Image (tube, rainbow, N blue to C red):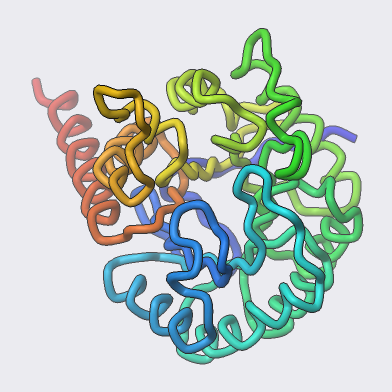
Length: 301
C-alpha cells in the first residue's frame, strides 16, 4: 500500500493536537534516565523532571518530549515496568499543567499509558520496528507519530552503519517504513519522519543527512514533515575536538547544536529536538524572520 501525499509539510505544518507556527517548532528533551548520553541523571526523578519540563516551556519550547529509556550507543534496555515507572508520573503532571507532551518510547504499552494521560505525539526511535503493536495503537488513537530511521537497538547499531549513499538509503528505508505503517492504518497526515542522526550512523554519515534534509521528507508516497535531532550528538563533539583529538564534552556542544538548528530550520524542518531550549528557540525565530524578509525582498520591483 502506498501512502497518499500529505498536503502540508515542513515549518508551519499542522498536526492534530500540536502547536502550529509559521516557523520550525522546538521540542525540549526531558530524559527521565540515569544514563542518557547528554544529561544522564540530571532529570532522573519525578520532581526534577516535572520542574525541568515546565522550565523548558518557559524558555520557549513548543513541545516537551519525555523519555524513560536511554538510546545512547551500547545502552541496555530497561524493563517495560521500569520505563513506565519513570515516565508515568512526569507525563501525568505535565499534561495536567497544560504542557504539549510527546512520549519518546518504542513500546506500545508505554505509549498507551501516555496517550490515555493526554499525550498528543508518539516519538518512536525504532520507526515501528521494535514493537509491531505500536503503529496499530497510533492508528487507533489518530495522533501524530514520529517515524525515525533505525537499523537496530543501541547495543549493535554501529555494526549496521554501512552506507554507499546515506541520504538515498535513509530516504528509501524511511519510505518503506512509512508504507508499512500506513498499511497498519496510520493516517499519513499524522506522520513525521526523522533521519535518525547518530542512530546507526557514524560521524561521517550525519553531515550528508543534514545537508540533504530537503530530500528526507520527499518519500515515495508524498511529502512529510521532518524532525531533526542533532542536539549534543557525538558527531558534533568530534567536530569540535581539541588539539589532542579529545572530543568536546556533550555539554560543550550547545553552540554547535544552535548552528544545526539554524541550518535545519532554514532547510524547512518541521521541528528540532534539543536539550537546551532558549538559544534554539531564538534561532528558529531568527530563521523565520530572515525567510520572511527574503520573500519580501524577492517581491520588490
